[in-house]
Amino acid sequence: MSYIQNPSSIEETSFKIIQSVIDEEHPDYRFQTAMEESIIKRAIHTTGDFDYLYNMRFTHGVNDKIIDVLKNKGTILVDSSISLNGINKRVLDQMGVRYDCLINHEEVVQLAREKQITRAMAAVEYAAKIEGPKIFAFGGAPTAVSYLLELVDQGLMEADAVIGVPVGFINVEECKEALLESNLPAIATVGRKGGSTIVVAIINAIIYQMKEVITDDYVRYSTPTTKKEGEK
Image (cartoon, rainbow, N blue to C red; front, side):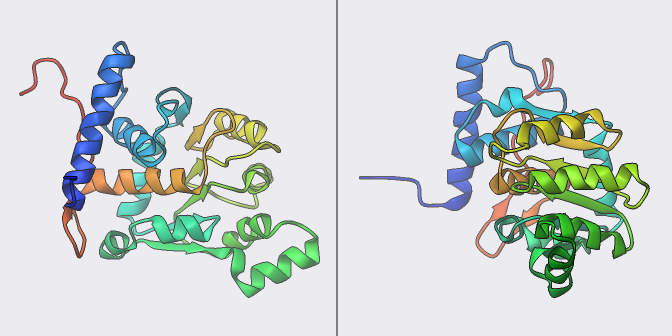
């Protein structure tokens, strides 16, 4: 049996298949921007789920805001080790961007015990001590999304952008609706779908659109986007 073994060829072919499925099964679908196309296609690439064509929302110029934070060497704060392991730290290091998952930090664990709240909520509160622009990214902690919104409303926390894509059944849909209705620049999925791998897909899609990413094994270029009418 013959099969593709080169990583870059696998990825390139996958995105071609994604576009062909969109052309065939969703012929009237149009992406709003090249960046949104990159993000949505990478979410589909990660999950094999074309529902992400319709359930992902972008508010208050969030993509430009995230790019601004990254260019200014801000901090990405994720809510799981899965997300932390999946984001391309090599290129983030090249850009001087900081990143962390605070839920296992001793101070956060202690704060959660003292206040009888989840560690994800305690991590949000602890993050107020981190200086500079911040991007919060939630893939598995709807309570943390709600808590962040409370702290922002109370003037106790600042968030430059929020990726709110928790997956599950308890407070998941409600917290994402509240996030989308807030004044915070946000990327969120409507409904129950999401997860840590979607956080990874979103962050990597954005940084791959910003520059070429050179890994140890191969050169990964930004996600191919569809050409507009009249473009060559």
